[in-house]
Length: 154
Image (tube, rainbow, N blue to C red; front, side, top):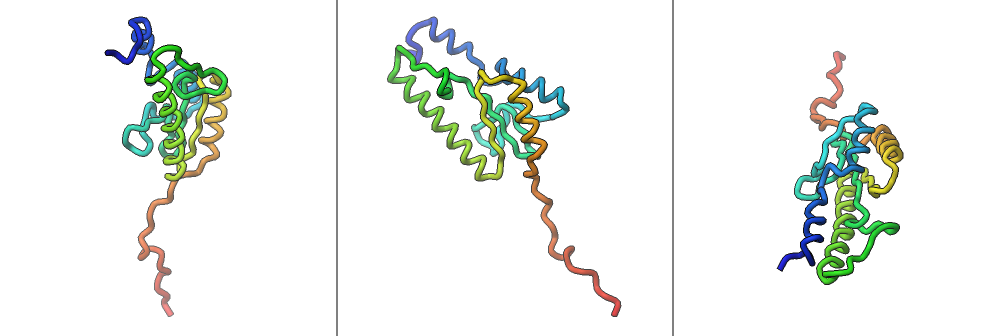
């Protein structure tokens, strides 16, 4: 038996995009127009946990979450059918989001999360400000021998 309760639901769910959603594209266009360059659908820490927009050198990870899939307090809905499947799945999505945030923050990343219904220009402005103020770049490792003062001539 399929995870979908009927053919219409199956078609609808298969039509959902994992990346390049309209809200993501709108924000990316604005960021690019502002001269910012970034990675798309990138795993900052490796593995399977991917951010929508990533500035690796600045260590800024941006997520633009869908209201249904990530439990928006304003727009999330509870599925009416196949609830034994959907409710735990949606709860796990929210739990995974919190875990991902914690892992990234522990690794020194700035994590920015927005809802798909938020204004693209406001998101882009906040992301640009975070990128410009973040100074997460690590200095290159120094060779201890190079830090010694030069020998004196006396």
